[in-house]
Length: 152
Image (cartoon, rainbow, N blue to C red; front, top):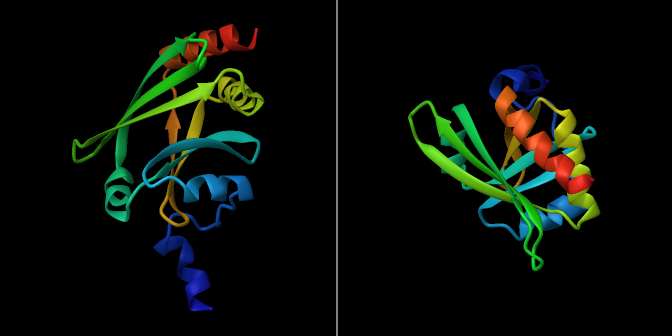
């Protein structure tokens, strides 16, 4: 009983975030990296990392983005490059490529276009922490323009 009362103070994820079985399978194949998935009808990023990296990444204080439309026939995609900086001035770089021929990726892009932010869920055998990352106005406009090119 006491653990139920203290849970919100001991763990920032008071509500356990449930993953789909497809996400669980995908995450089991990733040793370290990231993938987007849908949670509560919003696109969210899941970062898979060792506990030591997650402990550092919990303190993100700045996120910067770079977007690129890749129109190669072998892998047409929209790249989202992220640099996450922590309070300790440690930078982590992640690249995610949305396959522009995949209905799943297109659905995620459409969700992200409507969102001003996305959640990052840190995963190490389960989701152990979550953080909200907001797009700057400039990033939102640039990303939305590229998404429009992909879905039109």
